[in-house]
Length: 272
Length: 261
Image 1 (cartoon, chains in turn yellow, cyan):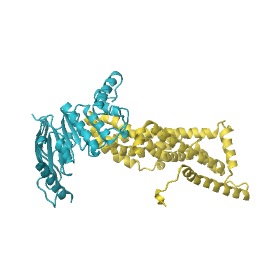
Image 2: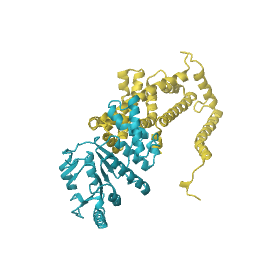
Image 3: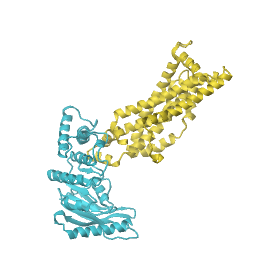
Image 4: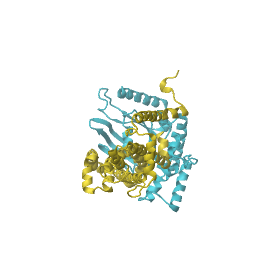
């Protein structure tokens, strides 16, 4: 008998083992939901799969009575727009300052302590300030996401730049590269895949800030809807929305991963 | 005028003396192999030639002028590892020097200039035996091929001096033999001045024209860093017999024991 640490499941078994927790939680949910509904058909806490399907169907495929929107899709579009904008802005600022900080000692001495301090401000604590400055519209939500994840990306990028082997930077200089060329031809191309990694890691936080902002002041969006229907204890809407948000998150992560593998095959081959 | 001259050169870090009283002259076209125990300043000396360390006392001159205090294109380098750029193909790694020179703003070449740079790079790659691997990435190459690429890349700039920091230390013995032949051929063809650090004494004995041994003359077992190393042997490679070999081997072994135990 081999040691446990040396035994590996084959493909099929791996799939089954991976799927097991999902199936288990589904079964537990359906059993408890049935039990509660058998006792009280009007129970709202654990709605049946059927009633969730009806609720989603209504939101996704019937125009809303108030403005004719298909709420599920318009919520998704608004949320994804905010999330996309927030993440893109963070990526740009994070890359720019991360590289400047990592590559140029004078800028690092000047900005690094400030960024470290700045990154410790809890973003949600300044949400009221954002609302006061930028109003309750789109800007404050996007700014909250950017404010929340940019410091992490900046610091991560700075670290990644400084982790590049000194040998490479020296070698580039012996090939006649100026500071500018070292940055553009040696540093930037090598930290881009690492930027995608950092974005993947900050997706969860970005969603957190998005939903928080939407919950507090918004008139559409996935987070807004969840908090709106909470008043009616509408678990048949909240639960599918949570699953949908999780799926979107997973899908974006998958897209970023695939993009990185396509664009930077050398990076993923090296990491193996 | 000598290409490189060291006059009473010292390097100290606080109270740690790494090098002391190094005096030497190197003429153009010499191929110097450097051996020594770890901690005996051979890498520090190479880093001074590279421009990333400065002497604390004395002078280090390049063609009669003080050494530049940063790396530059008159001195090429091949390290043991990380000498090539993982995000560029073999051909692009080799074209980098031309692109840096001819496109100082965008760093990339287009059209006929690019074709010319590519042709130069191909020629260089052929001379190091990488003509079949032009489009591969470094991670697809063996250790020996990566070092060939690193050498080709460094030579593209036609540096006056080529610095090799244990370039073949991580390679298998058989491949190391091929690399010795390659580097000797390239040296004869280009007439470049080469400094090569090695921890393999036999390697130092038949490669190149001159062997340096960095070692500590004075050794204090209680305080190993109180005294620095200098060049204890400086011998033309053709004239080495077994007695000298054994002498060097013995003295290196002695300081190794004191330094590492």
